Amino acid sequence: MSDPLIFDRDAGIERLLAIMAALRDPDTGCPWDIEQDYRSIAPYTIEEAYEVADAIERGAWGELHGELGDLLLQVVYHAQMASEDGHFGFADVVRAVSDKMVDRHPHVFGDESREKSAEQQTRDWEAAKAKERGKAGVLDGVALGLPALLRALKLQNRAARVGFDWPSSDQVLDKIAEEMAELRAETDPARQAEEFGDLLFAMANLARHMEIDPEAALRAANDKFTRRFRAIEAALATRGKRPEDSDLAEMDALWDAAKAAERHKTA
Image 1 (cartoon, rainbow, N blue to C red):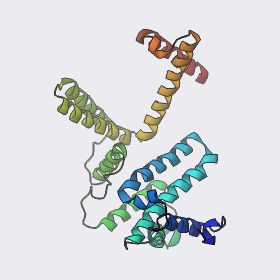
Image 2: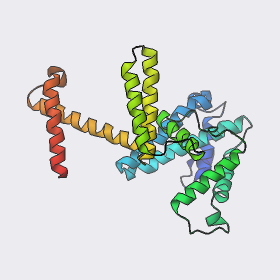
Image 3: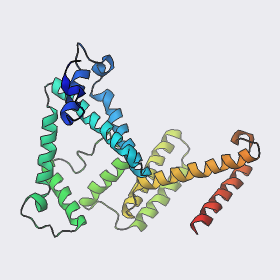
Image 4: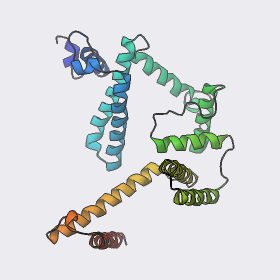
Protein backbone atom coordinates (compact mmCIF):
# COMPACT_ATOMS: atom_id res chain seq x y z
CA MET A 1 0.00 0.00 0.00
CA SER A 2 1.63 3.21 -1.21
CA ASP A 3 -0.91 5.84 -0.15
CA PRO A 4 1.05 8.09 2.27
CA LEU A 5 -2.20 9.23 3.92
CA ILE A 6 -2.71 5.77 5.41
CA PHE A 7 0.61 5.98 7.27
CA ASP A 8 0.23 9.64 8.36
CA ARG A 9 -0.61 9.35 12.07
CA ASP A 10 -1.61 13.02 12.22
CA ALA A 11 -4.04 12.92 9.30
CA GLY A 12 -7.17 12.55 11.44
CA ILE A 13 -10.48 11.28 10.10
CA GLU A 14 -9.28 11.39 6.49
CA ARG A 15 -6.71 8.73 7.36
CA LEU A 16 -9.38 6.44 8.79
CA LEU A 17 -11.58 6.93 5.72
CA ALA A 18 -8.65 6.04 3.46
CA ILE A 19 -7.88 2.92 5.53
CA MET A 20 -11.48 1.77 5.32
CA ALA A 21 -11.61 2.33 1.56
CA ALA A 22 -8.38 0.35 1.16
CA LEU A 23 -9.71 -2.53 3.26
CA ARG A 24 -12.81 -2.69 1.06
CA ASP A 25 -10.92 -2.45 -2.24
CA PRO A 26 -12.19 -5.44 -4.27
CA ASP A 27 -8.77 -6.08 -5.81
CA THR A 28 -6.26 -5.35 -3.06
CA GLY A 29 -8.32 -5.17 0.16
CA CYS A 30 -8.83 -7.59 3.01
CA PRO A 31 -10.95 -10.62 1.99
CA TRP A 32 -12.88 -10.57 5.27
CA ASP A 33 -13.70 -6.86 5.03
CA ILE A 34 -14.73 -7.19 1.39
CA GLU A 35 -17.22 -9.96 2.23
CA GLN A 36 -19.06 -7.95 4.89
CA ASP A 37 -22.36 -6.15 4.43
CA TYR A 38 -24.63 -3.97 6.57
CA ARG A 39 -26.29 -6.90 8.31
CA SER A 40 -23.05 -8.70 9.14
CA ILE A 41 -21.47 -5.54 10.55
CA ALA A 42 -24.51 -4.34 12.53
CA PRO A 43 -23.91 -6.76 15.48
CA TYR A 44 -20.36 -5.41 15.81
CA THR A 45 -21.74 -1.87 15.86
CA ILE A 46 -24.03 -2.75 18.77
CA GLU A 47 -21.25 -4.60 20.57
CA GLU A 48 -18.86 -1.65 20.28
CA ALA A 49 -21.49 0.72 21.71
CA TYR A 50 -21.83 -1.56 24.72
CA GLU A 51 -18.06 -1.67 25.16
CA VAL A 52 -18.04 2.13 25.27
CA ALA A 53 -20.73 2.03 27.95
CA ASP A 54 -18.78 -0.64 29.86
CA ALA A 55 -15.60 1.45 29.89
CA ILE A 56 -17.57 4.43 31.21
CA GLU A 57 -19.29 2.30 33.85
CA ARG A 58 -15.92 1.02 35.07
CA GLY A 59 -14.30 4.45 34.93
CA ALA A 60 -11.70 2.98 32.59
CA TRP A 61 -10.71 6.31 31.08
CA GLY A 62 -7.47 4.89 29.68
CA GLU A 63 -9.56 2.46 27.61
CA LEU A 64 -12.34 4.82 26.58
CA HIS A 65 -10.55 6.53 23.71
CA GLY A 66 -9.83 3.15 22.13
CA GLU A 67 -13.43 2.00 22.57
CA LEU A 68 -14.69 5.25 21.04
CA GLY A 69 -12.33 4.67 18.12
CA ASP A 70 -13.78 1.19 17.62
CA LEU A 71 -17.27 2.69 17.60
CA LEU A 72 -16.24 5.38 15.13
CA LEU A 73 -14.86 2.67 12.86
CA GLN A 74 -18.35 1.17 12.70
CA VAL A 75 -19.77 4.45 11.41
CA VAL A 76 -17.00 4.69 8.84
CA TYR A 77 -17.57 1.06 7.82
CA HIS A 78 -21.29 1.54 7.15
CA ALA A 79 -20.65 4.83 5.35
CA GLN A 80 -18.04 3.18 3.11
CA MET A 81 -20.45 0.41 2.14
CA ALA A 82 -23.20 2.96 1.51
CA SER A 83 -20.83 4.97 -0.68
CA GLU A 84 -19.98 1.87 -2.69
CA ASP A 85 -23.70 1.24 -3.20
CA GLY A 86 -24.33 4.82 -4.25
CA HIS A 87 -26.55 5.66 -1.26
CA PHE A 88 -24.51 8.26 0.64
CA GLY A 89 -21.00 8.91 1.92
CA PHE A 90 -19.35 9.78 5.21
CA ALA A 91 -19.63 13.51 4.45
CA ASP A 92 -23.41 13.10 4.15
CA VAL A 93 -23.50 11.43 7.57
CA VAL A 94 -21.57 14.31 9.11
CA ARG A 95 -23.69 16.93 7.35
CA ALA A 96 -26.96 15.29 8.40
CA VAL A 97 -26.09 15.02 12.08
CA SER A 98 -24.61 18.53 12.13
CA ASP A 99 -27.77 19.98 10.57
CA LYS A 100 -29.88 18.05 13.08
CA MET A 101 -27.90 19.38 16.04
CA VAL A 102 -28.24 22.96 14.84
CA ASP A 103 -31.96 22.60 14.07
CA ARG A 104 -32.76 20.97 17.40
CA HIS A 105 -30.84 23.49 19.51
CA PRO A 106 -32.42 26.85 18.64
CA HIS A 107 -31.64 27.99 22.20
CA VAL A 108 -27.92 27.69 21.33
CA PHE A 109 -27.72 28.33 17.58
CA GLY A 110 -30.89 30.40 17.12
CA ASP A 111 -32.82 33.14 18.84
CA GLU A 112 -34.64 31.10 21.49
CA SER A 113 -33.89 31.72 25.16
CA ARG A 114 -31.44 29.44 26.94
CA GLU A 115 -33.44 29.91 30.14
CA LYS A 116 -34.96 26.44 30.01
CA SER A 117 -34.72 23.49 32.32
CA ALA A 118 -33.15 20.27 31.08
CA GLU A 119 -36.64 18.72 31.32
CA GLN A 120 -38.13 21.40 29.05
CA GLN A 121 -35.28 20.95 26.58
CA THR A 122 -35.98 17.21 26.51
CA ARG A 123 -39.66 17.91 25.74
CA ASP A 124 -38.65 20.33 22.98
CA TRP A 125 -36.29 17.70 21.54
CA GLU A 126 -39.05 15.09 21.47
CA ALA A 127 -41.45 17.59 19.93
CA ALA A 128 -38.93 18.31 17.17
CA LYS A 129 -38.52 14.59 16.51
CA ALA A 130 -42.31 14.17 16.37
CA LYS A 131 -42.55 17.03 13.87
CA GLU A 132 -39.90 15.38 11.71
CA ARG A 133 -41.89 12.13 11.76
CA GLY A 134 -44.88 14.03 10.41
CA LYS A 135 -47.99 11.89 10.14
CA ALA A 136 -46.29 8.68 11.21
CA GLY A 137 -47.84 6.60 13.96
CA VAL A 138 -46.98 7.31 17.59
CA LEU A 139 -44.83 4.19 17.87
CA ASP A 140 -43.27 4.41 14.40
CA GLY A 141 -39.50 4.81 14.31
CA VAL A 142 -38.74 2.96 17.55
CA ALA A 143 -35.98 0.74 16.20
CA LEU A 144 -36.65 -2.99 16.17
CA GLY A 145 -32.94 -3.67 16.72
CA LEU A 146 -32.81 -1.97 20.12
CA PRO A 147 -32.23 -4.15 23.18
CA ALA A 148 -35.69 -5.31 24.25
CA LEU A 149 -35.62 -3.49 27.60
CA LEU A 150 -34.62 -0.18 26.02
CA ARG A 151 -37.23 -0.59 23.28
CA ALA A 152 -39.90 -1.24 25.91
CA LEU A 153 -39.04 2.06 27.61
CA LYS A 154 -39.13 3.97 24.33
CA LEU A 155 -42.48 2.46 23.35
CA GLN A 156 -43.93 3.31 26.76
CA ASN A 157 -42.58 6.86 26.63
CA ARG A 158 -44.10 7.40 23.20
CA ALA A 159 -47.49 6.12 24.37
CA ALA A 160 -47.29 8.19 27.56
CA ARG A 161 -46.79 11.40 25.57
CA VAL A 162 -50.29 10.99 24.09
CA GLY A 163 -51.86 10.10 27.45
CA PHE A 164 -51.75 6.31 27.32
CA ASP A 165 -50.11 5.71 30.69
CA TRP A 166 -50.83 4.73 34.27
CA PRO A 167 -51.26 7.84 36.46
CA SER A 168 -48.84 6.59 39.14
CA SER A 169 -46.47 3.79 40.04
CA ASP A 170 -49.12 2.29 42.35
CA GLN A 171 -51.18 1.19 39.35
CA VAL A 172 -48.05 -0.25 37.74
CA LEU A 173 -47.32 -2.26 40.88
CA ASP A 174 -50.88 -3.60 40.75
CA LYS A 175 -50.31 -4.57 37.13
CA ILE A 176 -47.08 -6.37 38.09
CA ALA A 177 -48.93 -8.32 40.76
CA GLU A 178 -51.58 -9.24 38.17
CA GLU A 179 -48.95 -10.39 35.67
CA MET A 180 -47.16 -12.44 38.33
CA ALA A 181 -50.42 -14.18 39.23
CA GLU A 182 -51.08 -14.95 35.57
CA LEU A 183 -47.58 -16.34 35.14
CA ARG A 184 -47.92 -18.49 38.25
CA ALA A 185 -51.23 -19.91 37.04
CA GLU A 186 -50.08 -20.68 33.48
CA THR A 187 -48.90 -24.21 32.64
CA ASP A 188 -48.49 -24.07 28.87
CA PRO A 189 -44.82 -23.32 28.00
CA ALA A 190 -45.67 -20.98 25.13
CA ARG A 191 -48.15 -19.06 27.26
CA GLN A 192 -45.66 -18.95 30.12
CA ALA A 193 -43.16 -17.23 27.83
CA GLU A 194 -45.82 -14.72 26.82
CA GLU A 195 -46.80 -14.02 30.41
CA PHE A 196 -43.14 -13.67 31.37
CA GLY A 197 -42.73 -11.08 28.62
CA ASP A 198 -45.74 -9.18 29.93
CA LEU A 199 -44.19 -9.19 33.40
CA LEU A 200 -40.88 -7.82 32.11
CA PHE A 201 -42.72 -5.13 30.15
CA ALA A 202 -44.59 -4.10 33.29
CA MET A 203 -41.31 -4.03 35.25
CA ALA A 204 -39.82 -1.71 32.62
CA ASN A 205 -42.87 0.52 33.03
CA LEU A 206 -42.34 0.62 36.79
CA ALA A 207 -38.72 1.66 36.29
CA ARG A 208 -39.90 4.47 34.02
CA HIS A 209 -42.42 5.70 36.59
CA MET A 210 -39.83 5.57 39.36
CA GLU A 211 -37.25 7.31 37.15
CA ILE A 212 -34.89 4.35 37.49
CA ASP A 213 -32.64 3.33 34.62
CA PRO A 214 -33.50 -0.38 34.38
CA GLU A 215 -30.37 -1.22 32.40
CA ALA A 216 -28.17 0.42 35.04
CA ALA A 217 -30.14 -1.26 37.83
CA LEU A 218 -29.78 -4.69 36.23
CA ARG A 219 -26.07 -4.11 35.56
CA ALA A 220 -25.64 -3.28 39.24
CA ALA A 221 -27.52 -6.44 40.20
CA ASN A 222 -25.31 -8.47 37.84
CA ASP A 223 -22.21 -6.95 39.42
CA LYS A 224 -23.52 -7.69 42.91
CA PHE A 225 -24.28 -11.30 42.01
CA THR A 226 -20.83 -11.72 40.45
CA ARG A 227 -19.11 -10.18 43.47
CA ARG A 228 -20.96 -12.34 45.99
CA PHE A 229 -20.60 -15.55 44.03
CA ARG A 230 -16.87 -14.96 43.78
CA ALA A 231 -16.86 -14.52 47.57
CA ILE A 232 -18.52 -17.95 47.79
CA GLU A 233 -15.79 -19.42 45.56
CA ALA A 234 -13.07 -17.80 47.66
CA ALA A 235 -14.57 -19.08 50.90
CA LEU A 236 -14.93 -22.59 49.51
CA ALA A 237 -11.33 -22.49 48.30
CA THR A 238 -10.16 -21.94 51.89
CA ARG A 239 -11.94 -25.22 52.70
CA GLY A 240 -10.26 -26.98 49.80
CA LYS A 241 -13.48 -27.12 47.82
CA ARG A 242 -15.02 -25.86 44.59
CA PRO A 243 -18.70 -24.95 44.04
CA GLU A 244 -19.38 -28.30 42.39
CA ASP A 245 -18.09 -29.99 45.57
CA SER A 246 -20.50 -28.02 47.74
CA ASP A 247 -24.29 -27.97 48.08
CA LEU A 248 -26.96 -25.29 48.08
CA ALA A 249 -27.19 -25.05 51.86
CA GLU A 250 -23.46 -24.39 52.26
CA MET A 251 -23.30 -21.94 49.37
CA ASP A 252 -26.42 -20.12 50.56
CA ALA A 253 -24.83 -19.64 53.99
CA LEU A 254 -21.67 -18.28 52.38
CA TRP A 255 -23.82 -15.96 50.25
CA ASP A 256 -25.45 -14.58 53.40
CA ALA A 257 -21.99 -14.10 54.91
CA ALA A 258 -20.80 -12.20 51.85
CA LYS A 259 -23.94 -10.07 51.95
CA ALA A 260 -23.42 -9.30 55.64
CA ALA A 261 -19.77 -8.41 55.04
CA GLU A 262 -20.75 -5.94 52.30
CA ARG A 263 -23.31 -4.29 54.55
CA HIS A 264 -20.74 -4.01 57.34
CA LYS A 265 -18.32 -2.24 55.00
CA THR A 266 -20.95 0.33 53.97
CA ALA A 267 -22.32 0.84 57.48
